[in-house]
Image (cartoon, rainbow, N blue to C red; front, side, top):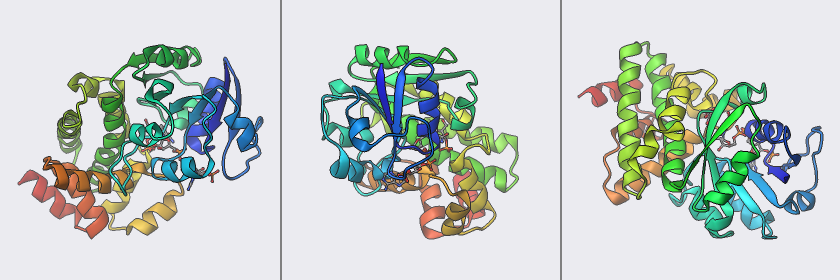
Length: 295
Ligand SMILES: NC(=O)C1=CN([C@@H]2O[C@H](COP(=O)(O)OP(=O)(O)OC[C@H]3O[C@@H](n4cnc5c(N)ncnc54)[C@H](OP(=O)(O)O)[C@@H]3O)[C@@H](O)[C@H]2O)C=CC1
Ligand SMILES: O=C(CO)COP(=O)(O)O
């Protein structure tokens, strides 16, 4: 297949590496990079299949400024909920392209391991299962693809797990132990399922690769940027210092703000997400958050 990856951050470059195993792939990003097959925006948009690895909080502005609908089929690779509006990525991309031409990739996948061609399993979700299968078949032999039609469940789980990962980093940063982390992750899974069901997601999706799989991975490893945000919060660091040190996107920060807005508006009980929001936005003492969660 003729493909283009747009967004040459860690994940875009990892997906470029992966899809290049079996396909003719080019890559584009706002900032030019010394990457083989780095092309102009026009060349990238001319490709029939696009992989969009632009971070969630920048998707709308990028589409409004640069996107031209030339009938492309699009695989959305970001994980997050838009802070300003509470919109999911399928809402935003759906304003520009019919859902029949949109698919969403999710699941346990650190870019650092995908670029090493280490074994990985991912979910590709779409209302158009034939399109999901097309993208799955384009994956390299070291990535096993699973298909789903639950785009809401896939999106919610991919976004929400980043917020639970922040909480898990706080837990480990405070040295609360393995029992505490296991309890937090388990209750986090319940919480994200509750949230997803409020939007019509299928509960079983949260036990899939994109749900429990990605949650377990991200909430248990310093490879996760979101987990490292939690470590920083536990050490009493301020958010601007944490993000400067990180130097990369941590989608859970913006998503936690979006979740707080949605929870207040729809009256959904999100105890862990609301404590993450309080630590990030209000500088709440992580130890007090733990006490409140145990209360
Ligand atoms: N890293 C990982 O392991 C994984 C990440 N993801 C998801 O992929 C998405 C991208 O993350 P990742 O690549 O890791 O992030 P990075 O921080 O590595 O890169 C983000 C990239 O976004 C681009 N960018 C920044 N600001 C803007 C903007 N205003 N408009 C358009 N592009 C912008 C930058 O490229 P430029 O300056 O060229 O525009 C930058 O390189 C996130 O949603 C993340 O959750 C999913 C699975 C794994
Ligand atoms: O989504 C990811 C792994 O599946 C990457 O997680 P982080 O964004 O926390 O690094």
